[in-house]
Amino acid sequence: MDQSVSEKSSPVASLFALPSRATFGLGDRVRKKSGAAWQGLVVGWYSTKLTPEGYAVESESHPGSVQIYPVAALDRVGDC
Image (cartoon, rainbow, N blue to C red; front, side, top):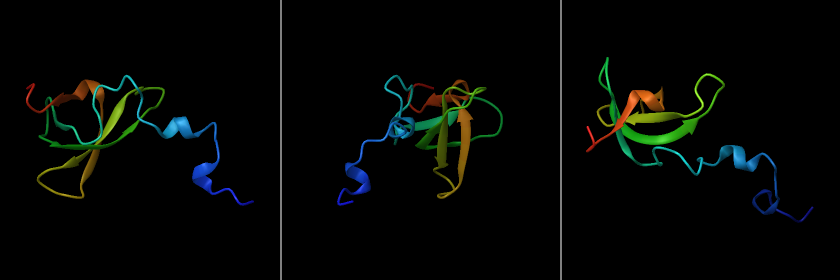
């Protein structure tokens, strides 16, 4: 058991990688399109049956506060 965890190949490892066709990348600045304002940096992503592409966005105004949104709810800052 000399192998470290990082050296082992795991079939679930790809489940934690950002999809290659992701709309936004980690660190991209985004904002909510409508409703309550939320703007910040993409710090993670998620996928469920109802939301195949969703993002965790950390607020620029309130560091440490994170909200999750489906891709359809977000615009890239600069493209708005």
